[in-house]
Amino acid sequence: MKTTNPSAPAPFTLEYSPNVPELLLQLQCTLAISTYQAGKLIFLSPVDVERLIQLPRTFAKPMGIGVEGDRMVLATKDEVILFRNSPELATHYPRSPGTYDSFYMPRATFYTGMVDLHDIDFGSDGIYAVNTSFSSVVKITPDYSFEPVWTPPFISALVSEDRCHLNGLALENGRPRYVTAFGTGDSFQSWREKVTEAGILMDITNNEMIATGLKMPHSPRMYQGHLYVLFSATGELVRFDLDSGLYEVVYQINGFVRGLAFHGDYAFIGLSRLRKNSSTFAKLPIADYSDYAGVAIVHVPTGAYVGRIKYNASVDEIYDVQVLPGSLRPGIVNTQRPEHKMGLHLPGATFWANPEGPPKS
Image 1: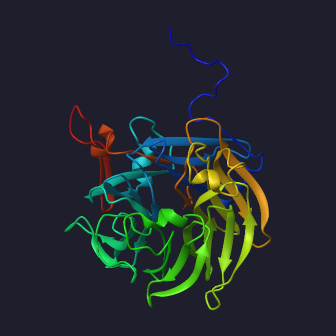
Image 2: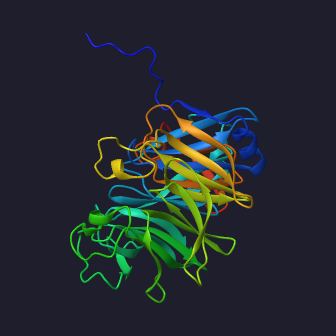
Image 3: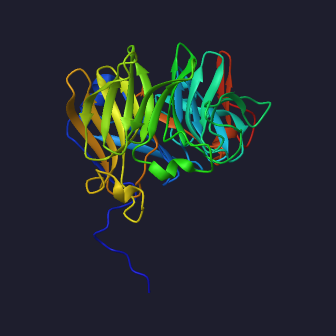
C-alpha cells in the first residue's frame, strides 16, 4: 500500500517575508513567474498587507514571459501564446465572477515547433525571442516557425545544435540590442566545455563583445538607462558600464539566479534549486547554498535585500520573472480550459458565451 508522508508540504506551498505582501500592495503589482520544471505560469498577488495568493496555470514547458501594456506573451515547448488583458471579462468570469481585476485571455498561438525559445519580448514591430536551439535572435510571425533576425558572427550555420547557448535578450527603443550566451563555440553544444566561465555579453547592433569570461549570464534587462545582468553561477545581480565593459555588483545572493524584472526601485530575481545530481551544477560556487526556488527582492538604489518568496514544494526551477503593473488580482486561462473559447472580446464590448444559448453580457 502506498502511503504519503504526513509531514510533506502540500503542492505549491510557499512562505514569504512578512513585508512582501505590503510591498506588492504598495507597488500595485503582481508577479508572474514561469517554471518549466513544474509546467506552470504562476501569478503571485497581494491579498492584503499580510497575505499573498497564487494562481498557477498549466503550460507545456513555459519559459520567457513578455509584458507590454495589456498584452502578455509566453514562450512554451513548441508554441508562443499571445494573451490580451480584459478587465471587463474579469468581472463576469463564469467560474469566479467578481474575483479578478484583470483577465488574460489567449488570443493567438504561433506554432514554432521545438526550437527551445528562452527570453521573449515585445518590440516596436513585433515579437522577438531568443532561439537557443538555432543560436539566433528571431522574430515570431504567422508565416514561419520563426524568422531569423540575428546570428552571432562566430556561428557558421543556422542549425538546431544549441552551439553557444544563446539565452538572454534585452531590447532598447523597441529593438533587440543586447544578448547573453554561455560561450562562443561553433559546434554542437560546445558551450558545455566551460559552462561556468566562458559567458559573453554582446551588442548585436554592431556585433561587438561588451564582456567575456562571465559566470553563466542570464536575463539581461535595460532599466532606467542601465543594463543589468544576472550571473547564475555566482548569484550576482550586476550593472554594466557599456562603454568600458566593466560591471558593479548590485547584490549577491546565495542561489542560482535566473529571471529578472524591475518595478519602481525594486528588482525581482528568480531563484532555482540546483539539481544535486548535475555534474555541471555541482561545480558552481553557490552549489551548497541553492536549496530553494522562489523570488528574491532587492532595493536597487541601495543594494539592500528586502525579502523573499520561497517555495517549499513543487517548484524547483524558475526561468523568468515579470511584473504585471496596476493589477492586484489578475486571472488567466490556458488553451486547455474551455473558457478560452467562451470569452469574446470586441472593440468596445465583451461577452462570455453561454454554452446553453446565445452570448450574454
